[in-house]
Length: 149
Ligand SMILES: [Zn+2]
Image (cartoon, rainbow, N blue to C red; front, side, top):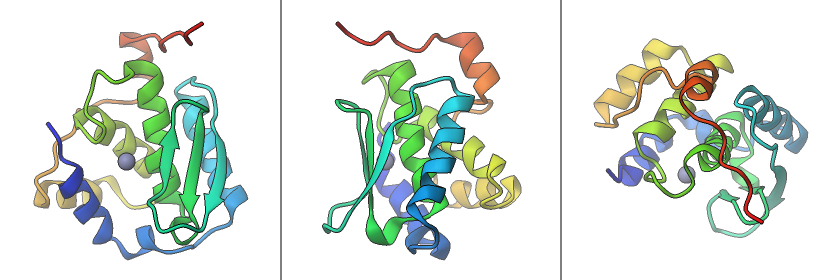
């Protein structure tokens, strides 16, 4: 199920999700923490000044943050893409239930907002997520996909 539109609307509603509120090295620290806890390769994190959104590129395992989206929640959004890629490749929707499950776990652990506030507002936006996408549960169920070649 594609819930990209709902997810972007939800992120827009949190003002701190839309500001350059930390340094690039802080973003890198959170990405590293997130990827290490799920035991996937840590992507490089750079910044770009173009108008395109922040993104994760699986081809070179790289996160590029738009300069005005340099904040912990967006860093964790992109880290979630990196994590999901290593477990699911392209078998799941970009912003599907599994993605939101990991993202929600990381936002909660990093104290971006209390879980109860995050889940209440996700419901308000009609966003669904898989419960228990903790590193322990994900590692129990799946092995990270092997790199090709
Ligand atoms: Zn995304």
